[in-house]
Every structure is written in C-alpha cells, then in structure tokens.
Image (cartoon, rainbow, N blue to C red; front, side):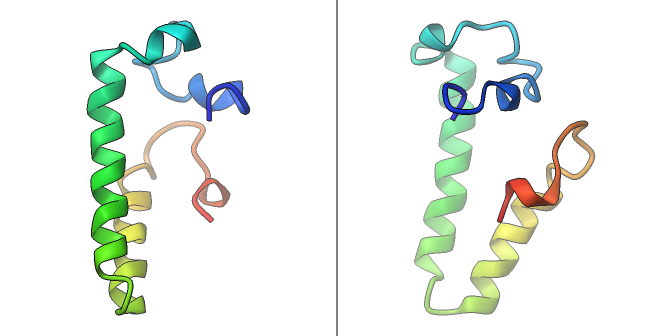
Length: 76
C-alpha cells in the first residue's frame, strides 16, 4: 500500500519516517499488520451475516475517525 500510495504512509506517525524497505522488518508494522488481519479474519468469519460484517468494518473505521488525514472513502 505504501509503495502504491506513499501519501498514506504519512498518515501513520510511527511509519512516516521509515523507508518502505525497512517496514518489512519493523516490529511496529508487524503489530499493526496483525491488528488489521485480525479485523479481516473477524469479518470473514462473520461473512454469512452481512449486518455483523458491516459492523465489524464500521468499528474499525470509527477507530480511525479522529486520525488526521483519514477519510471515509479510504475504507470503501
């Protein structure tokens, strides 16, 4: 994502000044990736219940509402 949309990397203060090549071995990136994958796992597990799946994704989006630079179109 950061290679195709470098501006997105700047939205993450912990990744902002880290070269993309170094992110593959970054402990902070691994922690964030695990959180993202956990949300996807939860959503996929609930895929038979559209309302529940949407709520899972909305919850993840709400977590980013206060983050400067994030916008709703980044999630859909």
